[in-house]
Image (cartoon, rainbow, N blue to C red):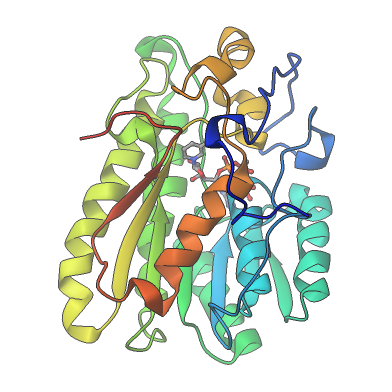
Length: 297
Ligand code: NAD
């Protein structure tokens, strides 16, 4: 059975997605996508890299966060995932996979755009896990709007609350629990450097996440807590089918990277595993760009 260590041509590891045009209301249910993204369910092979660790992953029900939850569990971590109430079907499936890996799994249905809710999420995760070693801020909001005049004040604020403010609130609450050796991994995007004209709010939040993470890494280094970022390129997830891209962009989604195909969440998760595990002990304030070969600064 091929796994993430199989030596092959990365460009040909997956076929082009060539998605049929499809629409779902925000936040999108992965189980209803065509095709359903690959989260590494049948390919991710753990080798004990996170044995005994505890992790909290936002947006862990689907897409990149779901792939990270599967990978962390197979590496030996207990995992709490956070998702929106409408995504219970996706969350239950990931919980089943965490338990199949022999680890403790727990899901929290909560909206992270509220500061008090973020503090409660961390409290619940710590109480279930008996501590917290790894925080993955992965939940994200992305809605494409062509013209600035049509970008509502409400959307602009909600994108920042979801992608930036929640990251701040969750991190602040988690710091009361993270030990030396603990890690924070934030999720930016290729758009942090090359903003799309129709995703101004989203791209700006991703630039903020990169910048915030680099500053925080310096602040927390004396405490032995590392802060890093994963910046994916175009990856086939529910974000795309719930308003993240226009119909034209969905049709051309495979053409965005130099691999000439979309990425799959299963290909992004190993970067999170590396940053979460002690093998990356001398890495902090870094961004791993997992984007199919696109140029970054
Ligand atoms: P996804 O839709 O599968 O995951 C996003 C998740 O965010 C949702 O499952 C949902 O649970 C969570 N979320 C959104 N708003 C929330 C809220 N208010 N409260 C609680 N949870 C909320 O899509 P994905 O592509 O896997 O996204 C994961 C991360 O990857 C995001 O930060 C996204 O910006 C980033 N990213 C994705 C791509 C891509 O092409 N897919 C590229 C670069 C970066």
